[in-house]
Length: 452
Ligand SMILES: [Zn+2]
Image (cartoon, rainbow, N blue to C red):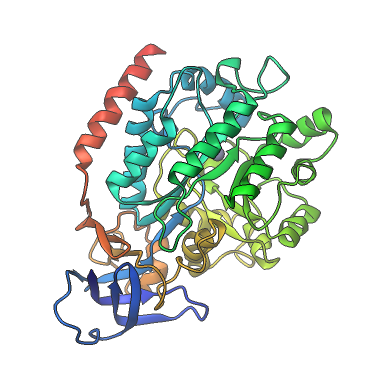
């Protein structure tokens, strides 16, 4: 299959040199970019798909490195809480999660991501109420139906109020069951091959919701099977004192003691870090998913992204769950990253291009796909997002349309390709009806709101 994206106003390739190409075109053959350059593409006959890029900025597909898709049905709950009180208010609601809920929530959350130019997302699903089944399978089906590249985590919790942790017992699982299910999911679904659309990761939720045994054994399982490893860390302001009291170690040192850090691991948030912590992340090449909107919503603070990048830490962008974002638009999140890093002054902030790089190439590197994704270069996979300049947001940003995407607040992609296949066309989903997704999400969301 051959796809041609032609005559983009500008292509921001995100290659090592930061090349930007005016009047740029891209040729994608069987999922792989074979040519990127200025002007019309080389004559190779009529393509199977032709995308008109005139008046649009082309970016590599954005990559979302942290989410809890199930929370898409619990927006605007627990509005005044910090991370710990927010969790306590929402845990009882999440005790009702089932496959129908997850399918509807994942469809809505992943559709919003796709429409914001995101072509690859992870999900960190850790709430498995007793008796629930088929939850990860439901979100895998939703992702496949939409056409997005998907890296779900098999999450877990086994440290509840009954044994000294945070969540209710109904959301805690047996350790052996978690490990067996994770292995079963990986053997059924994980595709390590080139151009993979589906990879499974291992995601114990958090050191205050998981026993040291499950944290350690999750890391061992991930490495035994060549899977990536994910958890939350250094988010709320009270986390350090809780972990010192319970385990006698600061958060990152605790995780290090579990053998968790490494170039196959990435951590959500990393807001509350010491200088030594940043050094440890860099030394171990551990990745970070920064989630600026969620960190503001819960009053956690602003992650030191500028410093982490300067010291060589791999950083990707995440929207986080929609109970704390409470949106899931990755382009809007890139703008949030740009602006939050300026809270301490503009002299050591990110540029718009640096924020876009974190949202594209940074994310691809954090999810272990840096060799294949994250930039528009010959040999990489054909994941592309186009944003029209002919919109109210972009009108007037002609001086620098690439930076204008963030400064102007462009939020909806006009065309999105995954493996060279259109999944968004003219601002609409290609494979699934957006209205049907909204109706189903609202049907269950209404039931949850009434049950409260
Ligand atoms: Zn999270």
